Image (tube, rainbow, N blue to C red; front, side, top):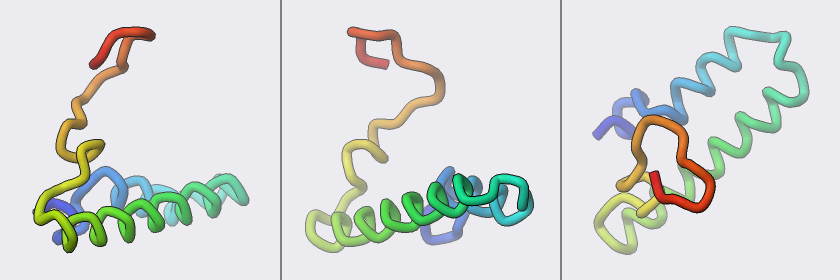
Length: 69
């Protein structure tokens, strides 16, 4: 639902990039990666009827090396 309303973390980062022109080429590259991931996500949902595992199982915080988050 958050993706459909553009409130997910991908859209929020893209909005931030749009508001921070100093991100330059790196920002443009990151924004394209995020857009590509959203396309991949939509295709996955169309095929399997649920979020991709990396989206569905995502949690706040940093993972420790060698241990799941």
